[in-house]
Length: 62
Ligand SMILES: [Zn+2]
Image 1 (cartoon, helix red, strand yellow):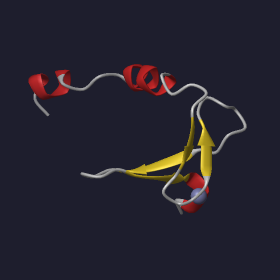
Image 2 (image 1 turned 30 degrees about the vertical axis):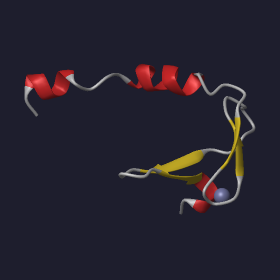
Image 3 (image 1 turned 45 degrees about the vertical axis):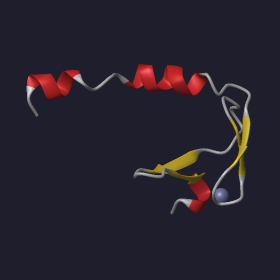
Image 4 (image 1 turned 60 degrees about the vertical axis):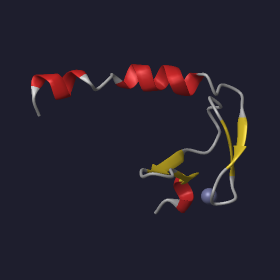
């Protein structure tokens, strides 16, 4: 990876900040389960990357 390519990548904290904007929001996932963001007892999620992100709970991610 070149230095310029490396500089295009933001830190996990930037991603965390983006995801914190979802604080308290509830979603129905592609697997049919639900998630409440920033809820410590809530489901974890697995995101399959690609043109259309597939987002399911981590229990269905195995
Ligand atoms: Zn699920």
